[in-house]
Image (tube, rainbow, N blue to C red):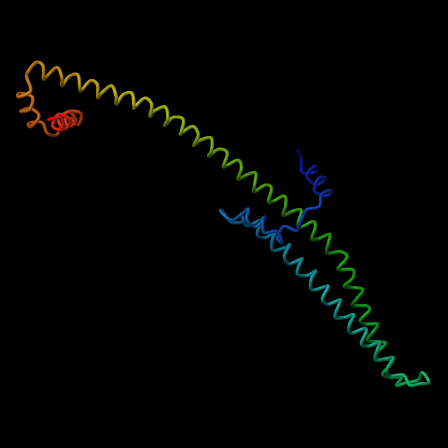
Length: 211
């Protein structure tokens, strides 16, 4: 599936502004944001700030324009005449304000498209990051699952080996007792204290408890 298909889907889908979505930020809590995502995030944040500033500037200019218009009205006397120079200055300033308002309106009309384009680009980078993470995690999951399977197999094998060794030791020790007698075996037990005969110790403890 090519990037053209992505572009078509994204163009026809309303995507929230990612930098304003706390869930989007939580995607990167563990490993942090890659450099390219941080750069695109800053670009989008700057655009949103510019949009907010443009709106504020427009509101302020509209207030100035209203004040100038109110001043012209207040400057007129009952006959409709007033300080002509002051009126001309106010009209000139109103024209300047209108020009500035026109520029701001054009910028405000353009900036939503720039925000959407940048937001869509950030969305694609985010998807790439997420699916790369999925690939890495999936491989680790497979590796860990294989390790667990092997450990379980080895555990079963070693449990059987352990049981066989214990049975073998018990049988040999029993044969030794039958052949040489307990007194002789006790002497050799003391001589070979480094040999772990836990099963024999357990038997002695049980015997002592029974007395």
